Image (cartoon, rainbow, N blue to C red; front, top):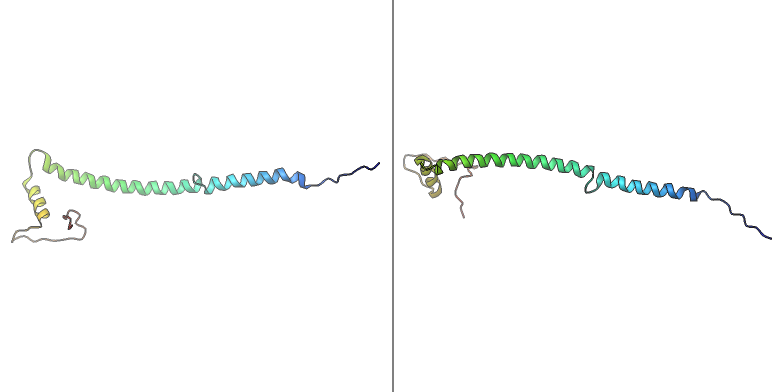
Length: 112
């Protein structure tokens, strides 16, 4: 009678650790590089800081515009403020006035 002897292979012992290493590597990579990983969190924090700085500038601009607007709305109309706005809108000046145009004048009327 013949008996079969199976030689034990070491490859069977390496299958589970190899699969474990592959799975852990996959999740480790995505924990760092993925859409919700550590890199994405750092990029998001930089973007938040930049947008908060933009928000601060916009809030300051809004506050300045609200202060200028309050001069026209308080029931008592400031004649100087009204005169300035009308002259700027109509691009008019008196003969004895000097007009200085600057590049960054954001209160200029639209040219369109």
